[in-house]
Structures are given as C-alpha cells and as structure tokens.
Image 1 (tube, one colour):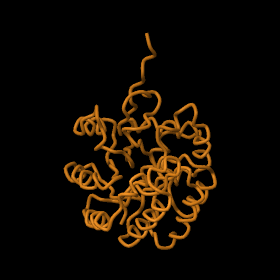
Image 2 (tube, rainbow, N blue to C red; image 1 turned 90 degrees about the vertical axis):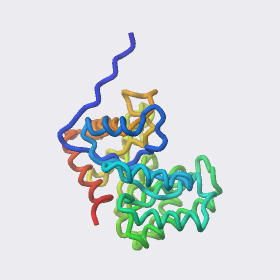
Image 3 (cartoon, helix red, strand yellow; image 1 turned 120 degrees about the vertical axis):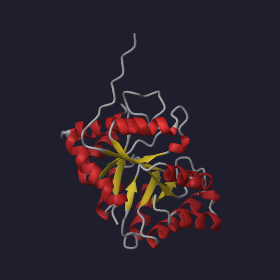
Image 4 (tube, rainbow, N blue to C red; image 1 turned 30 degrees about the vertical axis):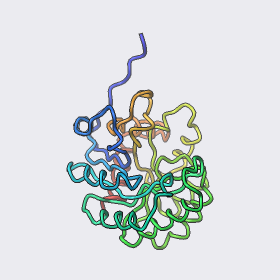
Length: 268
C-alpha cells in the first residue's frame, strides 16, 4: 500500500490566497473549490490575469463570488500580444471594486515566449499604469534578476503601493533589493520540493513581515499532494513549511502573513 496523504490542516487564524488561477482549474470546479477553501479557513482568494483572453474571465469570476478578487495584467509570455486596446481594457477593468492589482507582469528570460525587448517594454508600461491608478503589482521574474532589479529601482518612487514578486525562485540579490524597495516575496508549494533548498534559503533570509502566501494553483502542488492538480485549499501546507524553515510557530506565520496580505492588497 502507498503512503497515506495527510489531511489538510485547519487553523483558527484565517488565510488569504494571494495568487491562483481559478479559470485554469480542471478537476476542481470553482464552486466546490471555494467551498473547500472556506472549510480550511481561507477567507479571501485572488485570481490572476495573464493574457488578453482572460482579463474579462478573471473579472467575471471575481464579480460572482464575494470571497474572490482579481488582478488585470499581461504575463511576460504574452507580451507579444500587447496593444493599445489591451492597455485600455486593463485600465477599464481595474476600476472595478473587485480588482486589486496589476498583474501578472514581469520578465521571463527562461522561456522567452515573447522577445526580451517586448517583455521589457510591456513590463515598464504596466508598472506605469499601476502607478497612475495607485495599484500594487504582481510580478513574475525568471532568469531576469538584473533587469528586474533595474526596472523596479527606476519605478520605485512612482509606485507607492509596490507589490509582490510572486513564486519567488530568484537569487538573494533580487530578494534583498526587493525587500529594500518595499516589495513582498510570495512563496508557494515550491518550498516543499526536495530540489528547492535555494528557495528555502531565501525564506530564511526574508523577514516574515515581507512574506505572503500563495499556491499559484493549478500549478506547483505542495508536498504531500505532489502529482495532483494544485488548488488554493492546499495553502496551509505552505504556511506550515515556512514555520518549519524559520523555526517559529505556524500561528505566527499565519498571523503576520495575513496582515501582510491585507496591507498590500486590501488597504486604501
């Protein structure tokens, strides 16, 4: 018989799922997923836009469910699809009360699904948009530490609410610079992977006051559910791992990261 998987822990302190893709869920129908999130005390969920084709979908999902909020933005993979019309749609949709941030934006020089120059152009333009409407940003950065640092540094004064570098897997130089500039780092199931010791070292480095929790579901399912489609209700396993890495109580992790998430996304 195989090793039995753990039950999902339920804590008194509520959680906020700061980064998932509800419109990508396959096995988990949205309503049942949200019901399970409620059972494990996840009170708020932020579902993320990545492409012109899901800007309205994300807004629609957020509009239909009281506990769900959204973002508007174009992922670096899709930067080649950027147009003036896309920009206007992001700005228009971002006036909705359920849209909290501009994202997922940034740079990805690992896959280079869009030309580097276009990624940089679209990243800068969306940072400018976020600054103009006083929204935080949700940033994706892969194999682009130097360029990300340069661009965030140049936009630091304009961006009052800063944002988060989500699914953080970069090196300590970007981590330290992001923290210095006032950004948060988002950690997910990657920190439970055997191969991710370098990311766990960043968790150790990062002050708890600069950490927020996410799943990036349906991707990056944490141990002990590797092999299944990920879902927001696996978020407690991320909190437990951060507590283990930092050698503090999970209650402290939950309390501080909950407040961090409120401060970043829900404060005026």
